[in-house]
Amino acid sequence: MRRFLSLVQRAGLRWNVFQKHERITALAFSLLVAVSLANAVLWSAPRRFAPLSLVRVPSGATLSEAAFILNGHAVIRSVFWLKASAYLLGGVRSIQAGDYYFEKPISVFGVAYRLTHARYGLKPIRITIPEGLNVFQIAELLSPKLPFFDGKSFVGDAPEGYLFPDTYFFLPNADEDHVVLQVKGNFDIQIKDLLDEIATSGRKLEDVIVMASLIEEETKTARDRRIVSGILWKRLEKKIPLQVDATFAYVNGKNTYTLTRDDLDIDSPYNSYKYAGLPPTPIANPGIDSIRAAIAPEKTDYLYFLSDKRGNIYYAKDFEEHQKNRELYLRK
Image (tube, rainbow, N blue to C red):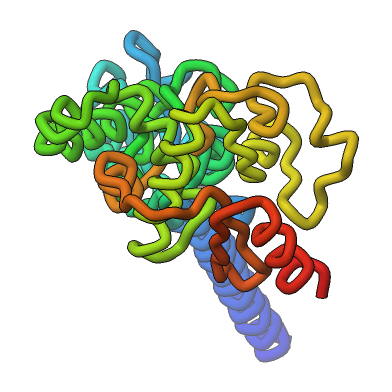
């Protein structure tokens, strides 16, 4: 009997040890899961994180407000863990207002560090504005690249013709005012050395830029630019309508091959078939070569020109020769 009781006691002891071991194992497993979950929150970004995110933390924003802003932009998973991390790194009053650029996902702890140490991460974005774009096309180019850029405001405020085509480096938080300031400033620098030549030519800067925009849209080579410049200035002197098809593209988006008779009768100051003289504004933003061509045209006997679909230009001295060119090169 005693032996039997002894065996039972030993079995009970082993069972208790087993149960205790099981509880420890379960606790350890739960702790591991909790640590893993915390790690997922602390060290991984949301799956819906959008690369190249730009987030503005306004001046005077509290830590909670900043956390909700970042969460709303899918930069962090948890408002709580951002606040907890910020407390560890410097406290509730340690966040820095400004524009934060997140090029790629980072942990919530990394976000908190940047927020409390003013690590804005603003790296310049390289953007090339090609020659010949108008303000509408430039707005279309920049809008998807600069989050704070307002295309409509840009179109309304930007000086057409005076936005110099070039490669620029804009900060991600650049708005339309910054863009105009930088691009127009570049124009002022580029044109400075040409002002004396413009004055010598007897023409106004405004007229030169309008002419340069027409040349930019109608030609491709340096020689053609100067010849076309000479033709257009001559037609102005003779009070002959310029008849430049590119002006219609500025009004209705059509080119030489899509224009109709009704288009040629449209009542617009940009209709260079109906109204003599220069258009009221530039129709594009010309490059330096077109501006130089507008300043120094080449004198020829030509009074007409046209270009085929490949951009080759054919010149004529009179209307009869011009009509022959139309038959040869535009009606194939």
